[in-house]
Length: 275
Image 1 (cartoon, one colour):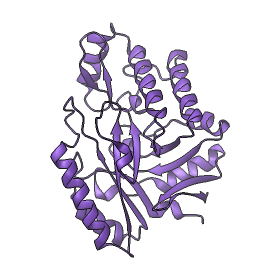
Image 2 (tube, rainbow, N blue to C red):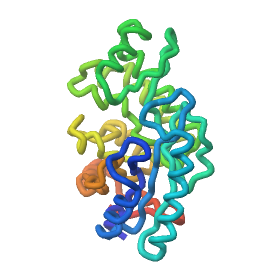
Image 3 (spheres, helix red, strand yellow):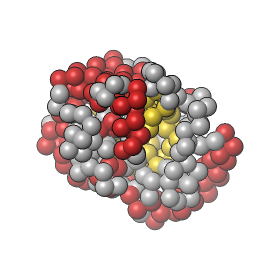
């Protein structure tokens, strides 16, 4: 049914990782706003102590609290216990209702450091200068190679495909139209196609003021359509006010690009929704 994508939000973070709100605050807001499905997707624990990820104790608390919310909202709101799994995580994503496979870090080949590529400009600059000899495109290539590795693991959703561009507005660190960039992105996209991934159209960079566009780019979405790929709308929520931020705009953009449907994740899996 058209418009059902407005009733499902499944990339959602709480205070147990790097979100602003408690699980309970998010659930009650989703219910009051008429959502049918709310999927929590806490950042998975990693042994390299990535700062925004859940610790092992918080992961246990997260599972327990989501289980209680499932009972509390039974018959009113379908709540899913998901995970945003990073390439460097040691958590088992199969132990959740669904999982979003994402890449947030690039590991430096010289220093062995884990560089967060989507938040602080100084981190990305250090990655480029200290480990990739000042070559920003080489970092983008390493990033997309990691995306391909995540795609090979067949996640429920492949997260923010071109996240590497988040703090690159104005091509500050590398040229997003350079043949090396597009070749690296296309290689990862082919890996996603081989593994029948569902790509999220993620509106968070616009909500948080980093970009005016979404993930992935229009060019990537055009290529994905040629490959008969499926997409799901997400808001990568870190603030409860953004539960379905940009969904109608993103749906209109997809329709303009030639898409006729999006996938909607519910308790029984994906259901296609006409645009």
